[in-house]
View 1 (cartoon, rainbow, N blue to C red):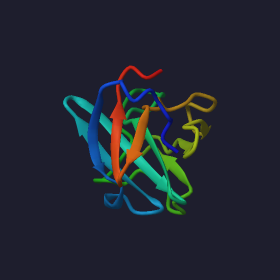
View 2 (cartoon, one colour):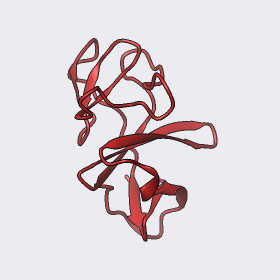
View 3 (tube, one colour):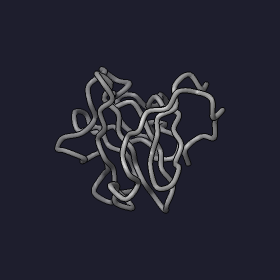
View 4 (cartoon, helix red, strand yellow):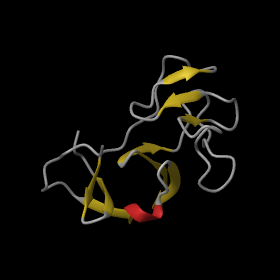
Length: 118
């Protein structure tokens, strides 16, 4: 789930939670930052949209970040697979490395990015 944070940290609205299928994913933009959110069993995880292997964006089509079974995040470039809950790569050229998690929170059905919370 989105990490709980100090409520005084600056926040940025990303999307409504209902805009993300369950299971499913949604690409997000915040200024020049490319992010994506994944929802699985009611939990939401937000990551930088950048593969740790060569830094490319992960999706192959709009909002397409999951494998065919919708159980893992998949990089379209090299097929690397990542655990949804942790971002850890479990298959592919960046095995053992992880996606960069983004601190976020859900409030009244809305997803927010929380700055400088770590």
